[in-house]
Image (cartoon, rainbow, N blue to C red):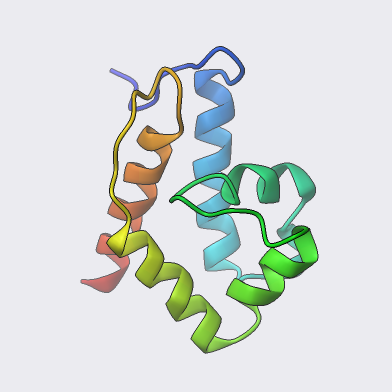
Length: 105
């Protein structure tokens, strides 16, 4: 059974690609070189985030300092997970939360 559900605009493979890229991004040490626009668009629309004006603003806020990284993960931890995965990325958010929990053990 696949852990992701397709939406009208995103396939199961799209969601899987997003979560795998997220893990790659984190494990790279949050390298800006692997923070492409498609990834920013998806990430900035998860966990109740709103876009910080643009890709550079979002990246700069959350991934250039240890305080920003902590703020991002605290936001992930506090987020209220809701919605139908057939219409949202809640399944991706839950997969990322589980990844975080695994890293903190």
